[in-house]
Image 1 (cartoon, one colour):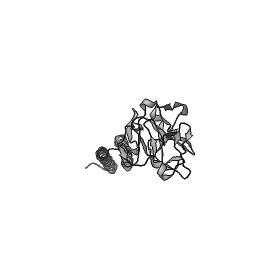
Image 2: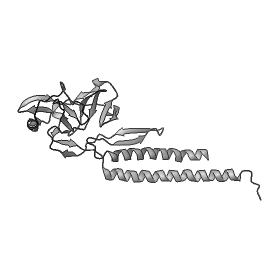
Image 3: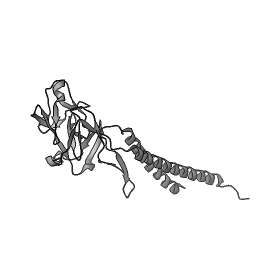
Image 4: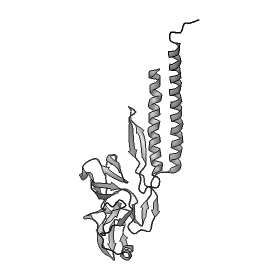
Length: 234
């Protein structure tokens, strides 16, 4: 029965991986800029975790430094581990007037970190246009450095809503101005659809139970076979 047990064990493990992925997606339904994961399997049934880069809904915030990308692109962040990327445009000014994300990492402009020496009232007057230029009182302060990659499969989630690129930084593709669509005072929500993920969870859970029952059945048959070995036939 060992060979017969292999298939339900493998099937159960695949369903467990899918359940873990769906659970993580649902846990991040309210995470700005979160991109859901999708599990697939190659010909050898090896699990592959792929990211769905479809856009999320745009949510109004009123914060002048909150921005969202209506289309392709990634914001660049300066971190202790080097340059990282994100779709989460929840930005603010730190105590030194540097534009940072919610974890305090500087947001990179085309000339490095962006510094704005503004009071609270002046900050309300900051304008960020559709190509990422930041202006205060008509004066150009800086421009967001927004890039993309041809092979997005090499972008890995590293926590804190950031992505790391597993390749040469020279692979960055700056987005041309006509392609940029930066929206101010809004953030991009998660692209997780709750109903869709709940339906998947129910389906995967049922399949997991089916494989579990199959394993229990084979286990009971093994016990019966072992118990009957050597028993004389009457």
